Image (tube, rainbow, N blue to C red; front, side):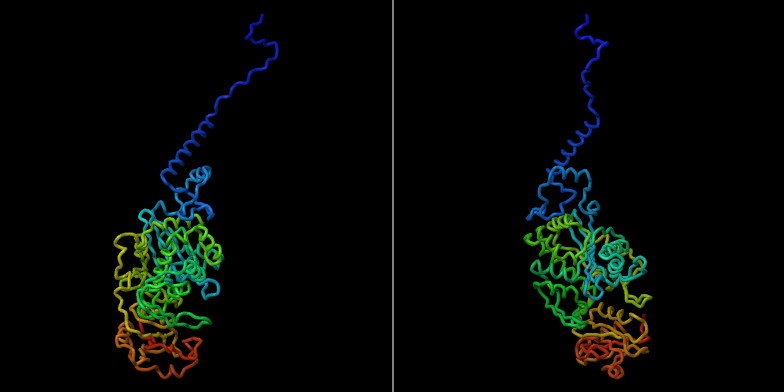
Length: 494
């Protein structure tokens, strides 16, 4: 008799399936998912931001600029990617963005960057700094030797169309020893349209000045003027104010122009953030779309929105640093072997410049000092000086034009003398009513013989016009608006 529960080995049996043991991997995954969800929930409760912000404007709240609610899976994905920082530099508490301003298609030197500013942000204190670099600064550009820094974008554009800004970013980062992960390149059209889009910018112009050599159509000149005081500028006016290089009353240098550009950028930032009207994501995305051929950047839309969100908390007092060649300044002028006028470090290397850039947020650097401002520069009465090069040394007139500008004198475009070489440097008083103070300032800056009236050989010669304009005086060999004519001789010091 066979027991009920016994097994007959002679007959085939249907065995009950054996319950498999739980796999350790599944248990680990379960705990991992629970842990991830717990941490993500903790992050949400404590207000920590997502590591990746959406690139579609529709996913942002119009008022707060924060991303709208996203699904749990997307949040988990962002956490797993472990990109804790939306922008490179947040871990080091310093985000650097290179801002480049170029003429763009249809302009001479379309991709030479006239505006070169490093925008620095310190997230922990909400501080913002603008560091302006002069376009004539000589730096090492790979495969091109020492060239003006404003050529970096042009070289990059020639080698890889559309990537000039990226190439310039690398050159700036290498020469200044800064981590500059981002760049934004804007041409004249984009700048003008953005200012118009926000209804203009309100600017407090520090002092009245005029520029009679502002570029006009067909290689001519036109005169622009600005009065001191608070005023609202449209896009075209703001662009003129930022570009002017030959203004009187102390506004005739590239360094003065750099300061005006910082003023415009600060005003534009305030306008963009006012009432949140023009920081809404849809509007920003539309602007970027319409100006896609005039703005290039390696920032994605999510990073732009994150920056806009940070800007709302930024301190209103923006720190400004202009790398200039004032008294005891960072830079000195020189003539390169190529004959080009350039600026270089007074110390022979970039150590001091790089240190100042690195420590731009330090307290001792936030206040203007004699070598970083024009506060101690004398502002002379109206009196325009033109420099002509009477030697065969290329670039000499441009060098001394900058020297005159840097002591506060108003200059006109320099050129070559139709007669060369000339032995003795001379200062010709063309306008007998010009101030004695201006005459003495020219003599102090550039020693030379003082003479009254233009030389006969200059008035009689018409073979090489150094003054080109659409006006009826185009055949003159000097600018008819010049009050003083400085002709450099071979006795001049290089």
